[in-house]
Image (tube, rainbow, N blue to C red; front, top):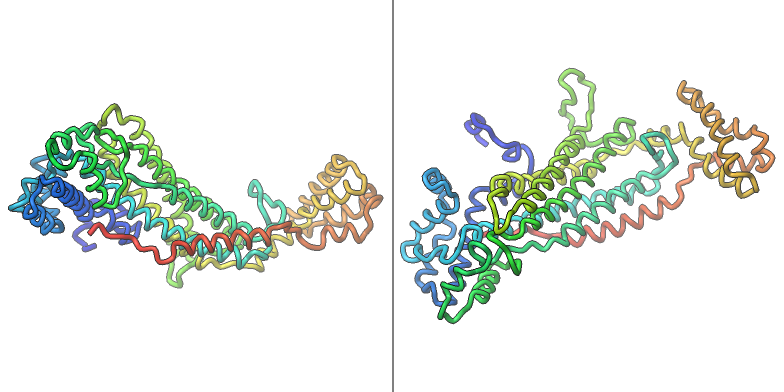
Amino acid sequence: MGGEEFGNYQSPFSWRYGSPEMRSVFSEKRKRLAWRRVWVSLAKAEAKAGVVSSAELKDIEAHATAVDVAKALALEKELRHDLMAELKVYTSQCKKGGGKLHLGATSMDVEDNADVMLMKEALSLVKARAAALLKVVASQAKNHAKTPCLGLTHLQPAEPTTLGYRFAQYAQDITADLDALDALHLKGKGLKGAVGTSASYVALLHGRKMNAEQLEAAFLSELKLDAFEVATQTYPRKQDLLVMQALSSLSQTLHKMCLDVRIMQSRFEVLEPFGSKQVGSSAMPFKRNPISCERVCSLSRLLPAYEAIAWHNAANSALERTLDDSANRRIFVPEAFLTTDEMLSVATRVFDGLFVNEAQLRRNLDAFNAFAASEPLLMKLAEKGASRQEMHELIRRCSLRAWEDVQQGKRNPLPEMLGQATEIRRRLSDAEIATAFEQPHFGEAERKAKDVAEKALKRASQYAGVKTGEVF
């Protein structure tokens, strides 16, 4: 951006958040190119029906990319209708075929089909970025399948797990989100006219060699789109809701992942990438803050809000349509994709460059591992005939006393306390007691982390080389 643009308000999505590729999808020029592609496809279908001549069609096609946004915006100030302004510009460029543009159509026959084309492209980009993140996270899960760490429940020390097992859960969630994205089969409105009955096309084609259904099929074939069988003036706004739900679900996954990194970084167990010249705080030069993860968590809150807007649009689209959705769709549809795009890019950089402090992970585990041994010890005692409830109470009382020492920075005395308890010594030998405290118990964490990682890597590879298309 040049300096002059900063004299007026600019959305952060215009320059700070989102990739150039995603911004391009939702640019004003691309939207108008999409409209023109719809008009061209309509003209081609109507040419097959004998409504548009070959010379008229050739003229329409020749000017399909001659978008003049400035001229259209100037006209819009007078007309107060953006699509009609663009149509007038296009018509003025087509001396032969301009009079046949938009024949039989209502505005939403153009706008809704164009919107779906752009959303399909945006979804392709989101899926490619989600797959790239999945590959990175799955690789980290595989690499750290055996890396021990202390599990936290209620943000308090619990039992041991592995870092890879923790990461495998993120990979599992991203895979579920990709499933939801893949399940979306976006459909256009097709050619259904002002209230969805295709009445204008039926009248236009009366006595012709093609009926309205055949015209719509030819039109959709040109656009490589499917359409809803029935619609009102718009395609069902439930489709927007389903898209936002999928993006919102993905944002929840990203928030969870990055929140966990923030917590782990506060314990010095992992560190997100930090540039050599990066400034953490204007007041505290030593600060190394997890600002990338914080950005993801901050942006992620937008998606549930966009989902709510889509819900209200679908619910309040009374009868054959109102304009309740029009203004807010201009905002939340592109911003939802740009937000998702930014979060995926940032999260991928974080997990790709994540520093794992294995020494600190071990220190934190060692400080509390004795408490984690209480469950296997409890099961061993029950196996030897002790009352589980009585042993649970004994271990609980000893643990609370041990906590007092740990909180004062002293060594955890729990192994000695339990090793000296008469009720325990009566059933377990010194060796059996010692074994319970000797090493962490990770259960199936390593195996499952590797299994999930391999499946996730295979899934991510399915999106390798996926390219997003251009409207023209």
